[in-house]
Image (cartoon, rainbow, N blue to C red; front, side, top):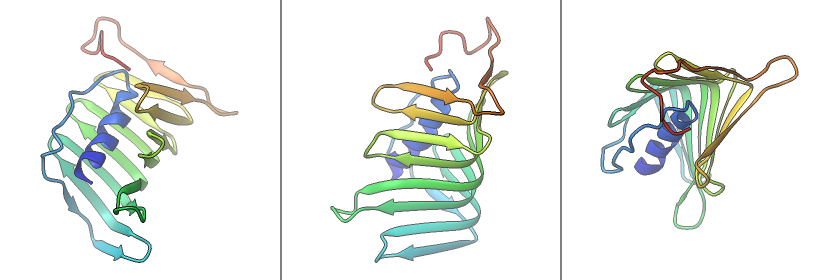
Length: 162
């Protein structure tokens, strides 16, 4: 679960055109919340209330974090953050109302007014999707909103991979 959580936060940040250095999966995962509900039948662990998850230099804040596993060897099937999602690493930050990591498809989705910032650079849209295996991201707009990117030439993020 630790390395998947690390990948979730790290890969959401990649959409900002500011590639972060990988964090070791050996770092302990520390989660604080007001409540934790584990459901063995549904194979879920739900952290609720002022959730703060920290691993290495990565920190995730959200109202609720649900970690799900499937029947085959309890492998992780989905990690989902609901409400006031904020992911921090150094000068990089991603925010949104909702985030989902699907390890089987290798996809991370951030929606609910998603915004990814690296230093002064900012990318917004309706949905930010990162395809892990292809190391590419797609930012889509909606009928009333367009994708917007503010990138400062010559800044600290020049040459960073999206």
